[in-house]
Image (cartoon, rainbow, N blue to C red):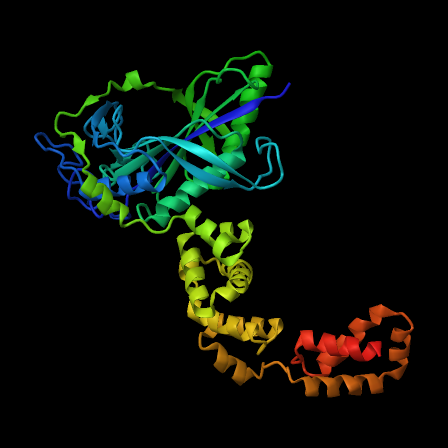
Amino acid sequence: MTWEIVIGLEVHAQLSTRSKIFSGASAAFGAEPNTQADAVSIALPGVLPVLNKGAVERAIKFGLAVGAHIAPRSVFARKNYFYPDLPKGYQISQFDLPVVGQGALTIQIEPLSGPSTGSGLQPYEKVVRITRAHLEEDAGKSLHEDFHGMTGIDLNRAGTPLLEIVSEPDMRSAAEAVAYAKALHSLVRWIGICDGNMQEGSFRCDVNVSVRRPGAELGTRREIKNLNSFKFMQQAIDYEVQWQIDTLENGGKIQQATILFNPDTGETRAMRSKEDAHDYRYFPDPDLLPLDITPALLEQVRATLPELPQAKRNRYIGEYALTAYDANNLTASREMADFFDMCVTAVGPSNAKLCANWLIGEVSAQLNRDALDMAQCPITAQQLGGMLLRIADNTISNSGAKEVFRTLWADGGDADMIIEAKGLKQVSDSGAIEALVDGIIADNADKVAVYRSGKDKLFGFFVGLAMKASKGKANPAQLNEVLKRKLGG
């Protein structure tokens, strides 16, 4: 009997403000411990929080990007719990009145390998509902490894603005969960509200996992905390799903719990029993007024939104006749999409497919080989476009283009100058190509006779001779046409 996997995500995105959410202290990453912990961060008696408008604008921006309801009035609450890196003994968050309400995100799923990958092997699209997104402050950080027998507390991160994005339990496989997390990661970077640096903790995922028989009520969930890698997310879900299924099939029961994933062992382990909302004793923060968002502010933020990934994908398919595969790859990051747009401007819409092929192919492959991301690409869209124009007008062959590309990547420069300096221009003169072919036919009469007797595979032999004779410069399409015509005669 089969099991159905049910997954929901809670994602914490650190917002890209210069200062903290309730004080003017710097929110920059990497400073010496406790050098950015001001009076508000360490909760000195008598200090009062002051809300950062930039954090509110970024939350609104996210809500608009996912088509969510933006609450005209929302309320901050105190979430009470004790932890050494939470100086106040509570976290300022939002509870029953969040700033961002229900929205949705469309995701593209590429099936993964593993026990919880899903039913199909073909890519497909799915809409994941977003329940809410609320503003809150981050806690400090406990440093366990730097001290023997003690724990150090760094409060630099305390008060950093977070947007917690909560999904509905709409995902049914690790592949869908990873695709949703990647789409969300791309979106917050795309609209400029979070740098998405998972190694620095700017984008952290908590994954709620349960299993049930198809059609049954939701099973008891366990929450995998603080996953900062898409690879670890897949591994953690795969292990947890199998553990829950084995437990239930052996007659056991699942206890609601918060769990951690150990990437070294590939296993999850329980950390504590899972708290419910009432355990946190939420109540409105008396030091903060309700957050009122005016229609004017809403429109002001809306005006700052760039063209969003889904709209850009649809435009690429409709305007340039690109495939869904191409459009998805080109919108994987805003840097890639911006590069493509500039490249199309340089080469013209009629060459958009050529530009897409090179970006998804040679450019991406070289970035991977050099361990670079698109923002670090050493050539500009204009440089690549200049080379692509010479492919389009048959000045250079594909092999010549690859040599130009390697030179641009390593040394920069201009495609036309490189083509001239390296002598890479194709021979496209029909008279010259016909004379070259006539010479080859005359020198290889025996092979021509064999070919004309029905040995069609010899055609490649003649192409090779012609390309060698032209030092690789003959236009391949013209050469093939002339050879077929003359050999056929």
